Each structure stands twice: as C-alpha cells, then as structure tokens.
Image (tube, rainbow, N blue to C red; front, top):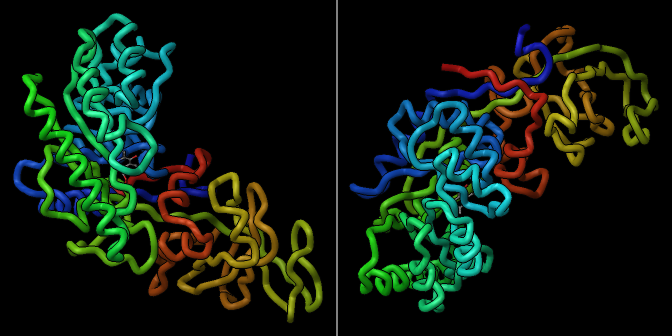
Length: 373
Ligand SMILES: *Cc1c(COP(=O)(O)O)cnc(C)c1O
C-alpha cells in the first residue's frame, strides 16, 4: 500500500540528526542530551525518532507515560527511559518488567512506590516554581525523606523551568530564581551521604536561553524537532533549526463553485466569484484543526491556496482557482515546502493561537508517518 495515498507526514531523519548535533555541540562538555519523545515524539512517531536518536548516540530519553516507555522498549530502545509523569500503582509491575525509570512526583508517591516492594529506578522531581509535579524545593526534609525507602534506587534529581522561553526581565528573574532553588536543593542533598545521582533542569529553552548551565542531562524537546514553539522566537544561543516534519495530503476531487454559492457544513463560506474548488483528503481527525476553517492555507504546485468553509472530520476544501493546472491526485502541503513556498508549523500554530507543540503532538494516528532517510 502506498503510504502517501491519503494524508501523511514525512519525517526527515537527516534534519533530526542535524538538530541533535547542534544541541550536542551547544550543551557543555559532560552534559548528555535526554530528548523528550513523549506524545509519540511530538507527533513525529516516537519509535521512529527514538531509533534515529539512538543511531546518533543518544542513550537517554524521556516520555510522559508508562505506555510510551513500554512502546519504546518493545521497539528495542535501550538505555534510560524516564517517565516524567504519574504512573498508577496498578502499573508498577510494568516499570520493573520494562526497566523504566519513574519520576517521584512527591514524597507521598515515594512511599507508594516503595510499598510496591520491588526495586525501582527513580528520579526525584523538585518543584522550583512551576507548581506542577515535584516536592517543593524549600521542603528539604520532605525531599531527603525520599532516600529512606529501600526499594527506591534514586538515580536522578530534576526540576523543570516554566518560563525559560521568555527573555523579558521579569521572566529571566523568575528563571534565575528557579535555577537557584534547584542548585540549592542539589547542594543540600550533596551534603548528605547519598548514593550518586544525576541532575537535569533544562528543556529546549532552558538550553537555548541558558546554555552555560552545567547539569548531567538536558531534556531537549520541541526544538530538536526543528521548530520553535512560537513564530519569531529569539534565543540567547543561536541554532539553525531544520524542520523534521512536513504534512501532506492529496486532491480527491475538483469542481466548480459559482458566484454566490455557499460551501460545506454550516455554509460558512460564500463564493465572491466563480471558483475552482479542490476537496482534500485530510480533516480534523487527522489533526488538521477545525479552528483553521476559513483561515487555513495549503500549497498546491507551489501556490498558496486558502481553506474555504468548515474543515470536516476527514476532508477539507480549498479554493484552488489560482492553480488552474491542478489535478486530482496532486500533492497538497499543509506544513512544509512546495517549490518556493513554505508553510511552517510556527505559522500554523500562530493562526491557532497556540504553540507548535500542541499542533504537532495532535497529529492523528491515521496520518501515515513516512520516514525520509
Ligand atoms: C515536555 C518536557 C520537556 C521538553 O520540553 P520542550 O519545551 O519541548 O523542550 C522537558 N522536561 C519536561 C519535564 C517536560 O515535561
């Protein structure tokens, strides 16, 4: 079966590897990358990207959930796989079975994990200001108490920056506070006679905006996929990000729309003049958001064309009048480049008033991932 028959995403492995190399060169000597491959590798295909990263020498990964970690192990990914989120006690056996490392989301959870009664590798989460997961950084006694548990093998202590992408003075002050709180916790722990543990704090923008910080790991996420979270993002360190994913579909049918006629569910668009419509085989169930109804754009034969009418679950309609030679079966690009025109993920995310992380991670399972080696 031709995987490029309907709707597909091309995953450009050379670009992914080039982004990885840039980050490897950017982080300090002795810092190892632990790429985030959660949410199916930000929609790129978790196994696809983890395998390519492993080929590039990556030995540590982070995921959001147990099932994501299990999927990587089943695909033959070795090394450290850290689950950043909560795992239910019913699923603790799988942590052991698949050799996954669990985040200790707070001190109470440490007791629960220990009560399972089998040895588990863990990293301890510290809350330095995001107020999501982790024991609060000032509660040193509660943090230290996690070391009392015989079944917990504490291999790491980490925190997460929540405004490191923002270079405004206020944001930088907050991030500096988070960095200090984290360093203080690590220093306090080091004063005790604890088994060695690894440190990590930064995601993509922690690396790009605070490139001199030295920890054992750096959890690069969105930017290793070659895009910024938002358009026109400025960073302290310079990178030349190469987008890894492009999104395509095909023209299923062409037809005329006459002046004054409406289109699609809810009849939300009316032709201002005679038009040539193209119906495309991709919809919101594929992750092309319905919010792009009447404002999305696509590329056909290098020409930018607008989405008209409401986006359907499995299809959408564009005004292809500007491409008179368009044919049924033509490739249509929604993210990526066609001849001299490009629609970046950042541009699409901006229209949706969101970040590329959300757009890409929401791409549907029906979209075939086609690996470009
Ligand atoms: C998702 C995530 C990352 C990666 O974040 P990016 O901003 O995509 O680089 C790193 N650390 C944690 C805890 C995360 O949840």
